[in-house]
Length: 376
Ligand SMILES: Cc1ncc(C[n+]2csc(CCOP(=O)(O)OP(=O)(O)O)c2C)c(N)n1
Ligand SMILES: [Mg+2]
Image 1 (cartoon, rainbow, N blue to C red):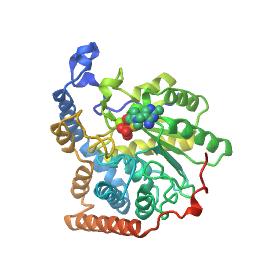
Image 2 (cartoon, helix red, strand yellow):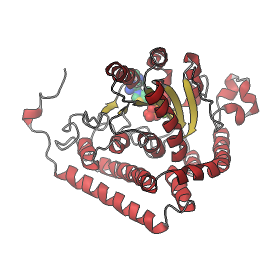
Image 3 (tube, helix red, strand yellow):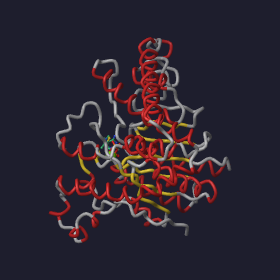
Image 4 (tube, rainbow, N blue to C red):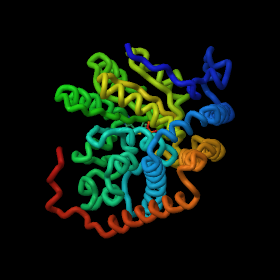
């Protein structure tokens, strides 16, 4: 059975704490300093990987590399602006931001062909834009305006575009894992050559649908890459308090499915693992589980007071900011200079301003739209 080794990146507790192998209720309640130890290890691991990362950068087209950085910066600035206009009351309802996780969407999705399919959870604004949706249509959707990608009827959690092969935006935790598996089944049945990227959070892994879907995908040899975005929290509950084992990638071993742990702060590591997995899906019609570990800087949603973690913990993870790491590497590789980065920032800021202006000016859906495109 095709299987890749779990990478040597920081993935298991045993590397941070010798006692972890014999877990007791006491050691499973890890405190902040142990978490920080993981960050230190991640920094050390990253330093070791820098040389091979620079080699990957040199093998990649410069235009694509700059576009990857642009998409990450655009995603960050777009989400910051969304928070700002949310607080002004321009966006209502739920709003889950992606800040800190940009390398996952960009590293994986920019390794796809445009005809490939993507499905994700409610934390979907950046994925939608990386798939090709304009910032205007995403922002107008957040506002609930007619200019939004689904005419303002979906809102933050339900970005969708049939033309762009972007299948949402799902609010039921883990629900998209079953739907994504069905999409991969359809691609295989129709022999369309498409690959599916199916994103979900680490808390979704505790749902039965994850295990049922992986079993079927491996059994039926489906062209899908499951991407677990491990941002370490499901609402206010840390992974350690909800999951008996930290190692999510290894869960795929139960189905003899290929799997890898990936440093989600390193966009090139995400890209390399995604290229391997997408290639396996396209050429061998075999699935992969990627556990991509990052950190959610903001609250679960805009209404989260964040009492379950400290500012110090957040600041510690921000030391490995994915945008800063990538920018530094591109500068080191001679792909980017400070002036180029200023231009990227300027272009992203302008794109976000245009999106807000469009959303501000877009009308609310008219009454005639009340019963169209709605299933009830
Ligand atoms: C089936 C189901 N159970 C509970 C919820 C409430 N809920 C919404 S988000 C969430 C946490 C999910 O965390 P994770 O999967 O790690 O994704 P993240 O929000 O971190 O991206 C929960 C429990 C839900 N939407 N659906
Ligand atoms: Mg999570």
